[in-house]
Amino acid sequence: MSDTPTNPFESIPDPAEEQRQIQEIAQLMLKLLDKRYPSPQQMLRGVHPKSHGCVNARFDVLPDIDKSLQVGLFRRPGASFDAVIRYSNADTLVREDLRNGENGSRGMAIKVRDVPGQVLYQDGGRASQDFLLINTPQFAFANVSDYLKLQQILLQFDDNPLAFFAPLQGPVPTDPAGRAEFLRIKKSLDVVNRIKSQPVANPMEVPYFGAAPFLFGADRAMHVAAVPAGPEKPQVIPQNPTADYLREALQTTMAGNEDIVFDFKVQVRRAGEADLHIEDATEFWPEEDTPRHTVARITIPAPQTGLDTPEHLAECEEFVFTPWHALAEHQPLGGINRLRRPVYTASADHRLARRGTC
Image 1 (tube, one colour):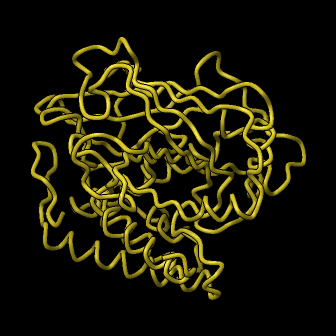
Image 2: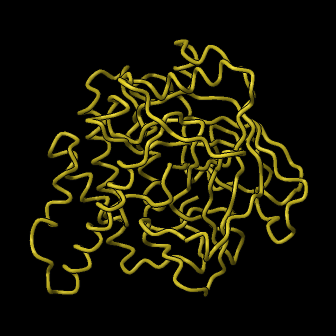
Image 3: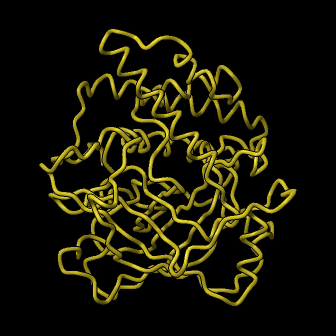
C-alpha cells in the first residue's frame, strides 16, 4: 500500500512538508538506534524497548455486541481470535522501572492474529490487527513537527528530552504561531507530569488507552481502551522496588491460576461532529461526552510459565507491533499515526536486520 486511504477525518495543511519531516524522523530513529546499541545483537526497539513480558491471549468479540458496533474486527458477534500481548515501558532506554521515584509511561501492545478481511499491511505473511496502548488516554506529543523536535533533542542530548520544554521558561510569545507552539509544549508537559504521578504496581491491573484515533468503518472514528474486568485494584508501589519490579509482578501474576481479563472498549464519533482533535494526539474524548462501549473481551489464561527463559524473551523481541497492521476499516488516523507507518517499519527492519533475525 503506497498511499494513505482518503477519509473524512484527517487534515494535513502541508502534505509535502509533513512527508519531509516524517522522513527525517525515520532517519533520526536509525541514528538513535545505532547510538544506543553499538552491538548489533543487543539492539532493541526504538520505542518501548523494555519488555515486562509477552503473554498469549484470546480476543473474543461479544456475542451480544450492539449491531451499530459490528464493524471491522467486531463485525461477527462471538468471533474468537488468538492474540499475543506485550507489556512494556515507554522509556527510550532499558532503565529501572521507577526512576528517581517517578513513574513512567507503560504500554500494552495487542496483536490479534489471523483477522478476516483486507488489512493495510501484512504481518510477516499473516493478517493481524495491532492495538498499541499506553496507560494514559493522551499521547505526550501532539503532532509530527513536535515529534521531530523531540527526536532531534534526544539525539543531541543523549536521550534526555528536557530541552523540549525549555521554551516554557521564557515569556509566552505574542505571535500566533509562537503562542500556539508554546501552548502545545505546555500541554505536553502537563501530560508528562500526569504520567509521572500515575503509579503502576502491576502492569496487568491497570487500564490502557489507544491515545491516537482509528477509523471505525467509513464514516466514524474510534478511540480504544482495554480496561481490567472487575473491581479496580489499588496500585501501591512496593517499598524499595527492584529495577524490574513490573516484570516480577507480571511473572508472579502469570504463575497463578486466575485468568486475567480485560474489557476491550471503543468510543465512536461520526465525521462532522464537534472537533474530534484527530490531528492533536494530546487530546482525548471525555467519557461523559463520548461513552465507552465494550465490544470484546481479552482473556489471558493462567498459568503461563517460562516467561523469563531466553527462548521466550527472544521470541518476544521478534514481534513487530505497529498500528498499521490493521484492517482497512480501522485505518490509523492523525499525524502521530501517519509517522508511525514508515518510522516503525524502518526501526523494525533495522533492528531485526542488525540482530540477524530477518
